[in-house]
Length: 256
Image 1: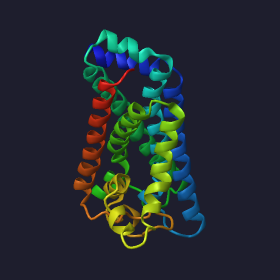
Image 2: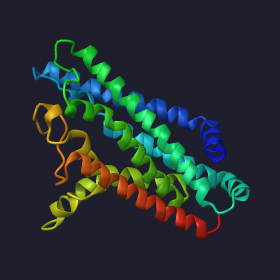
Image 3: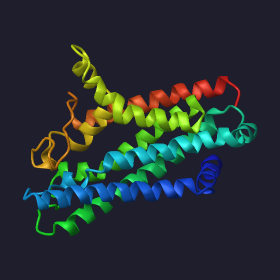
């Protein structure tokens, strides 16, 4: 518990987590409102999924927050002090990962529900009520996805140890690398189906029930993952935890 309290204090003693949290909520809500308003203007019925159109952008900001929580400690040398106070390294790094994941969970939930509320205000005549498990999953599911994505970002931060490099790697992979894999001839589609953020998308949108069955347009582009929604989240979580375990083991064996 002392380690968790220490990590919480360290995390919120700087301004960057507060700014990242605010930006994540604003970006998620703003893009969701833009998509919802665009659907209304085009004469297309907006859906619950329309209000969550900015979730990917909010997710990126959360991962930036998580990566910076590690790389800034390497930059200013505070991680050395932590390792001296808690020898073994595994416990403090696990506490850091748990703290950041918890914060990411809260940010994801707040961002998703703020976006949903903003969409409901913009389109009061649309049926945006959370009437089904698919609707609830699309909105409330963003928190768990952000938590596991934060673990991935912490792992990348531990492996790379430089803020610019870690942030660039996360953004390029999530926004460019995964989509580009699908364009590889012959094997691209088969590989893309099993990539982690594609699985996270499957958990959020499933078969498109929260988007009125639409694929793209004023709703999400549906995932081609072969997994069911629950298994998709479990798969994403397994990758995040495995990567974190590798990163902690690596951090334990090299100089801080």
